[in-house]
Length: 277
Length: 104
Length: 149
Image 1: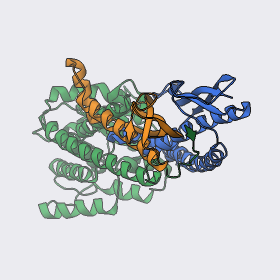
Image 2: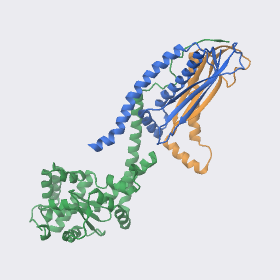
Image 3: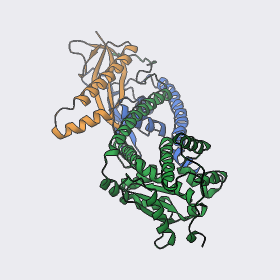
Image 4: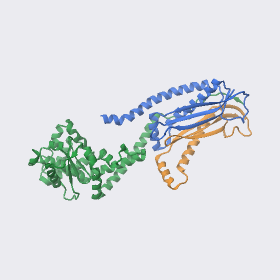
């Protein structure tokens, strides 16, 4: 038996595919499949959300209100004369068909923002009230948030967030972000970021409520027009971050008002005395 | 190509040898199969998906080893050994090696 | 902007891992091929003494050992591959390098000792450390045999 030294020249233990091509194929498959699953589950969420009973909605909203405070960077104020006024204004804007009791939360915060949380919670910040010049524009913003509540956009966001979180934990074995409370994490991610179509639906619902309350939509969009000029101001960017704003939004509303025969002219209702103090 | 796990080929004499040849492949299972395996863990029994996967991988490792043997002009590979190792979470390597020889 | 950097930072690591990892892999393969040619003259077999052996006066255990770690790119691709299933091509080169490097070290040790042949060679592969999310996943390849002279 003799030894014959021979060289193995062809690499058989290595696949002939370039690593980057391999990565691209993998990424394509994974992204495609997960997108399909996400969309399918999202549709499922959309189908389920309108059937959630009010009690469940309240239970979900109540448990996430603390993280909503954090998100708006404020602490709730208990005794302020403006609260009862805001609460009354909010109640008067509610659609008569809606049964859910509304709760107004007034937050001391330097961030200019307003938000709606499932379970009839509407949050308004002190910095936001400082920007408001008339009741009409305040009413529109509140009614816009009520529109989100009415369409259950918050619940939809929660549902989609839950789906994402679930998928994440299935794949990677941990809950995303390492937060102990799943709902808490989800609120941060998605509760204040609605899609464009959800925003315009809420806009329309809001304008409708303003018309119901005042008989006209005059001055209700003034705040938007004013804030838009200040968009570069750091204080108000937060509001636009969660409520993507564009020229189109006002135009779309005015077009819709025209179509429905709503008057966009009318008298300005002043804010009550407590605001000028 | 004669493949054996013995030190030689019975009834034949080794004329020449060419050194060690090896074949290996790394395989990952997919999450679909993982999920089914998780279900199976409840009721027990053979994990057909995994068996198939490993069989396929083992065959590929063998094939690659044979390819190396052919390059060397061998007509048998003796003393074949398998080594399976888990190289990372969820991925296993199937490795086969032996000595490429020429028998009468 | 800071958030963006935070989100993208793993991808920088992966990209960096790919560039550097691919460079070192290429270098390593060049070195492996060169040394394989240099050590080709030493017969290495994995059968034992049931075959007729050349005359020898001395025998000794020789070992070649390598511990390797995948780069960030390979780890990332494996994570994706774990979802899809199938052949993990990026790890093939890793293990191929480790196998050949360990055998080369065994041969070099044997040649340094003056061996005429290495017999009964066995490979062993082990995962060192933790292969799950925490800790550095690394692989050990050890090859051992009996050198004679």
